[in-house]
Image (cartoon, rainbow over all chains, first blue to last red; front, side, top):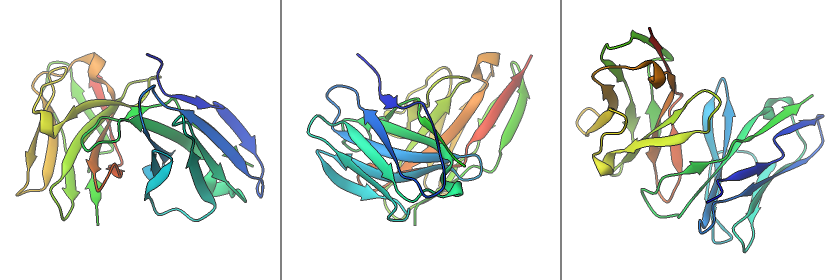
Length: 113
Length: 108
């Protein structure tokens, strides 16, 4: 079974630009969640999608958005990039029920210059 | 509000020594708690969850609701246990809150 796949692996952008990150979950998983990981803040929850609907949202500004497609693949978009958005963005998939383990991707390392 | 704290950023122990990684949480409901681990150059992965009451790689964790703690323990640390450990709490509907993490270093 293929694991969670995130593309691209690395991204370099400049302030003000926008970026789209992609996540393909494990086959059969309907929940995809996104996390921002930084050395200072650790892992912070961005949002979770289940069956194409945003089910939960963390405390991030509206510049951060996402969506999920009918095949459960998910994209995350960040508009008007700021230097502070530089981070490792992790995606995780699961069956979507309570107490289900999360399967993480390798992440997309975003650098904003 | 949901919150997870891990007081130690770095914990160093010698091989064969007992290890305890501390985790405290705050949550108004009935918590679902997990330990995730990230070994060098590997993905973040589940180590264990409290509902399973299991021992994985010799690690156990007991939920203490009175002390709002979920400490991770192993009686005899091994060098291969060196990794970053995250305590996590599942809030309503797959909304996971992670602690800041503790880096465990097991010295030979």
